[in-house]
Each structure stands twice: as C-alpha cells, then as structure tokens.
Image (cartoon, rainbow, N blue to C red; front, side):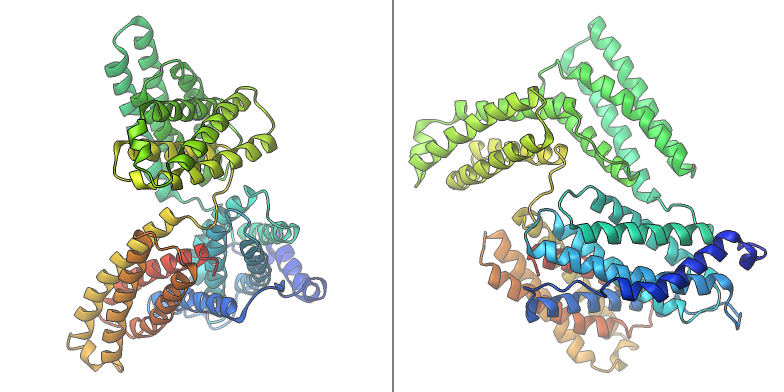
Length: 540
C-alpha cells in the first residue's frame, strides 16, 4: 500500500492529527484512567496481570525477529506521528473497557467471559504495537499489524454491540475506539479489514450444506412435481451462495459482499419457509446446519442480528416434538432405576408444561423481553431435570436428551440470548485442547532443547522440567473436568498453577533462534489464547 505523495497536505491526516493531539491533552482530565472495581481481590488482579504478561510475551516472542525495523528512514514521517498518538488514545480507552467488562464479568452478566478474554487480548496487542510504533520511523512498517488490529477490533466491537447488558461506560468506550479506528483508517487509507479467510471457509461449508439439503429433499420426500420445484429453488439458493463465495475469493469490496449476502439471505428464507411444512428430521438437521453457518457469516460481516420468527417457530416445534417423544419413550421401569425418581417425574412434568407454554408464546410472536424471561425459566428447568436424570447417561434416553439440549442451545442463539459465563462442556473442550497442545509442546521443546543449539540455552533443564509439569497439570485439569469435578476453587487453583508455569515456559521459548522458533511461537500463542478462555470462564 502506497502512502500519499504529500501526506501532511492531506486534510484527513491533518484533521486526524489535530484530533489526536486534542485528545491527548484533554482526555485525562475528562476520564479516569481506569474504572475501579470495589470487589476485586488481589488474587483476581494477579490473574489478570499474569494473563496480560502471557499475552504480551507470546506476541513479543513472535515479533522478536520478524518485526525488527527494516526501513532505513532516520526521521519520523507524519503518518507515524499520527499512529503513535492514536494508539495512545486507543490504549487508554481499552484500559477503561477492560475494567468495565471485568466488573460485568464479576457481576455474572451472561456472555462476558468470551468478550472479556478478547478485550484483554486486544489490550495486549495494542501494547505491543504501541511499543513497536516507538521503534520505527515509517508507518508502513506497521501496516500489517494495524490491519490485523482493525480486523480484531471490528469483530470484538460487533460482539459488544450485540450484548444488551454492558454498561453505559463500556458502550461509550466502544464508540470512542470506533471513532479513533475510523480516523486512523481514513488517514492511512486502510479499508475495513474483513476476516476473509474465515469467511471463505464458512462460504464453502455453506455451499456443501445446501448441496446436502437438496440431496436429502430428493431422497426423503420423493420425486413429485412439488418436490422438483423445491429442488430447483434449492439449486438457485446454492448458486447464490456460490456467487457469494466467489466474491469473497475475488477480494470484492465489503459493500459488494454484503449486497451479495443479503441476496442469498432473502432467497434462503423464502426457501426454508417452504421446507417447514415437511416434518422430517433429516431435512431439519440440514436446515439447522445452514442456519448455524449463515449466522457465522452474518457475524463476520458485522450485520446486526434480529430475531427470525420462521427460525424460532421451527426450533420451538422441534424442541416441543422431541420433548414429547422423550416422555413417550421413557418407561416407568427406567424411571424407577433413578435414585431420585420422584423428583425426576416432578421436574419432567414442569419442563414439559414449560415447553408447551413456550411454543405457544413463539406462535403468538410475543415481545423479546417476554420470550427471554420464559426461555430462562425453560433453560433452568431443563438443567434441573437433566441433573435428576444423569444416572441414565449412556442410554438411548440420554441420547434423546442430548438432542434436546442441542435444540435449547440453538434456541438461545436464535433469541440472541448470551450463554452463562461458566459452561462446563465448553470448559471441558478447552481443557482437552490445552492438554493436546501441551503434549505437542513437550515434543517440540524436547527436540529443540536436546539439539546442539538448544543444549547451550541457559536454564535448559528447568525449561524441560517446567514443560513436563505443564503437561501433568493440563492432564489433571482435563481429567477433573471430564469426571464432573465441580469444586471451582480447586479448578481455579489448578488453572492458576498452569498459568504460572506457562509464564516460565514463555521466557524459555523466547530464547529459541533455530528453525523450531516459528512453530513454537505459533503454538505458544494458541496455548495462551486457550488459557485466557479458561481463566475467563472460571471468572478469574
């Protein structure tokens, strides 16, 4: 990307620098540097500090050799002056945002664990980029990192915009960062950064899912005239999805891609309304898969979500039917094997009645707040019932219950309700990922530190020991969660020990200068990201 011939003469750049300078002078007197949480403990702050240290070390390790200054320029250009000033402003506002979201996380507001981790990562990336900006004289040295930061911020800002319960100050910080991001993008001629790689992947998945849907329509519903017309319509929808995929691959502009997506979305909704008339589980499965991928593309394009009544009606119908089928299939003999059989019968009846009521409310298209409150009752009743039935794990009845649980998750998403911050299934998945990566890391560390180059690394034996202990801790953590261990204090203790051990390992990884370096750095960033997810779920 080329800079303007006379950058300082650019009105956009001149205005942006003036605004940044004014912000530097006035903002400290208008805003506190951070929002203090009255209930934060020293232990919680220590975890946040360690997460920041891990995120920063991972990023710095990755930049150590790849991001050294390369431009021979000896004096600052005007764009780098602007960039430094803007980064200071954004960093200050990111501090405020992190503290606001931290307070919301401690307050138990749903959905906060994910966005808090993402915001902490953004704050770390800003710190590393700000430090780099002070080392270079030409803004073009930073363009790749600025584009990545723009992409990550837009994704995070979208997530925050979809949350109903963030504080007024958090909303204000998001808007301020958005304004600065727009100013620097315009001044440096940086277009909005889409995650094109992920969007392309989702578009390919969408094409394949639509192909499967059309095949299942033919196989399940026969070859009548009506079905033939439906498959033709399905072919048109798939062609539109393919056109969307082609535009993403060709690097078309954001506006062009959004226009193409909206065309597909309109065709898809007309098509799926025709399919709702057929009560077929295979076709329902295909439709739900398309809905999920469509939702992902919607998010990647930062398009605000709205409740889709056709989707909600279908999901409520599926849930209601599956619950009825579950209760029709459970035998009295099976129920009597439960240690709390009477409680299970009672909670089951309550849950079934709530399902009847919820389906009716959806059909009446009740207001969002009514549906949200009723869904919360439904979700809570389901958790109680599932707990009473847990002794049937591994049976066909339990498999039916897992299907119902999937429907509840889909309904929550369709209603735009954020999940609880603590999700045991998600935590088990993260722990499994962490254990797998830890074992991979152990192999790579041993290969490096046992090589001729690695044998001279100071503290080599300690790093090998730390790696072994990190693997042991990750296995223990995963095993506890998989076995249904629910003592959060013990889980927090293990996860904190993992984090402390990981910080020691990052110091060692930073000393690697062999061909193993790139892979170790990539793996270390992934491990750090997983630890941030785990700590955020455990509410720090």
